[in-house]
Length: 146
Image (tube, rainbow, N blue to C red):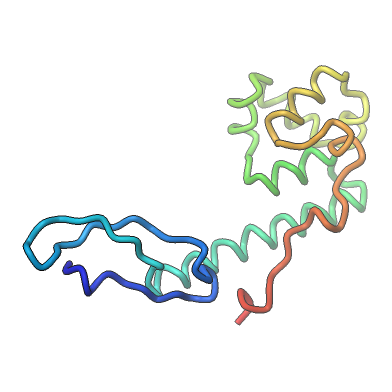
């Protein structure tokens, strides 16, 4: 694509904060690097993907408040970790992580295990123990809901 054809659909998701590196051909026929704000179909797909993430996090938050899941489940959802990925980051077996998603089992975890989870999920041990606060739940902005 030519330099003047690089998409610059500065959609409401990007709001000028995010750019993607693309390569285009300049007037002399050389490949040059160009920043793109994206294009409408790609931005629409990103919006849908993030909406699904927000819904999953909110549902997990509700389950934690209802006592159906441990706070570990919320922070995993918020960081987009599944059991397999968290196991890879922590070297904790998947079956143990699955059991730690149960609130009763989670309450019995030792400090060292909590530290490992907290480090992997970029949260404090206290934050992990106390569970999510409403401010921790990402929410849909009006712009993303258009």
